[in-house]
Every structure is written in structure tokens, then in C-alpha cells.
Amino acid sequence: MTITYKVNHPISAQQLANVFEQSGIKRPYDDLKRLQQMINNSSLLISAWDEQALIGVARSMTDFSYCCYLSDLAVISTHQERGVGKKLIDLTREQIGPSCNLVLLSAPNAMSYYPKISFTAASHAFFIPRTN
Ligand SMILES: CC(C)(COP(=O)(O)OP(=O)(O)OC[C@H]1O[C@@H](n2cnc3c(N)ncnc32)[C@H](O)[C@@H]1OP(=O)(O)O)[C@@H](O)C(=O)NCCC(=O)NCCS
Image (cartoon, rainbow, N blue to C red; front, side):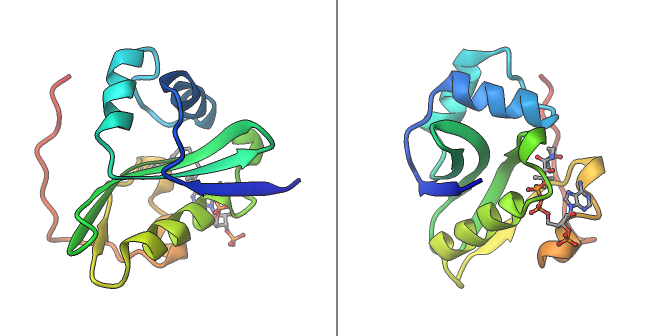
């Protein structure tokens, strides 16, 4: 299986919904209008493709200068554990360069994943959760 990766390649809300739903990540995949806004207002979208099928995404908001928030990292279940998630992170890091922090909130089931791919857990992070 050959996986190809693209930077800021256009994707549809339905394609993103499919990746979210088939990865198991908790995201509003039945709200295509909201997903379209998420796509429109991202500053960096790395996508992974198996032939013509979108199989993984890393979606970030960044200034490409100082900080980057990685909001969504998802790989569909049939393609997990093959290095796709790690490659999506590597390409995100390549795009933002060494002057940017890369920050994320981990899902409970991924808490032991991020230390494996170079992330350091932070005890000084704060956030205000969304209410809907
Ligand atoms: C978490 C996720 C993005 C990882 O992507 P992936 O392509 O399956 O992961 P990789 O193949 O790059 O894994 C790299 C390493 O981490 C391990 N790993 C993968 N998922 C893991 C998890 N959830 N917890 C701990 N380790 C994990 C792999 O076994 C591999 O280890 P190895 O190098 O010793 O072989 C993917 O499993 C996913 O989409 N999960 C559901 C959605 C989710 O939880 N996203 C994270 C939201 S914060």
C-alpha cells in the first residue's frame, strides 16, 4: 500500500467527516456546515491518501512564525498503526519550521501516543472548553 501526503490540498466537508467517523475521533462529523468552516479557517492541512481516498488528516491553526495549534489528528482505523499519524506530524513540523511551538490537546486514548512521537506533556497548560 502506497500512502501519499499533500499539503493544503482541498478536501470536502464530507471527506473530512468520513475520516473523523472512521478514525474513532470525537468530532461533529454529522455537521457538514461546521466541518466546512473548520476547513476554511485552518491554516495548515496535511492530508494522507490511499489512491484517491482520504485516509488521514492533521489540521492546524498557525502563524508559521511562533505558534501552531494542532486541532485534529485522525487516521481511519484500517490504516492505523502504519506510521501515518507520525508522518502527518512530521510534515506539520516541517511546514511550521523550528520557530513554532506545536501544541495540542490529547484525547484520552492517545495520551501514551504523543510521548512516543516526541511530544512533551505540559503541566502548565490551561484551556476553556467549548460549550457546544
Ligand atoms: C492516534 C492516531 C492519530 C495515531 O495514528 P497512527 O497512524 O495509528 O499512529 P502511528 O502508526 O504513527 O503510530 C506511531 C507509534 O505509536 C503507536 N500508537 C498508535 N496509536 C496509539 C495510541 N492510541 N496510543 C499509544 N500508542 C499508539 C504505534 O503503535 C506506533 O508505535 P511503534 O513506533 O512502537 O510501532 C490514530 O490511531 C487515530 O486516528 N486514532 C483515533 C483518533 C484519535 O484518537 N486521534 C487523536 C486525537 S488527540
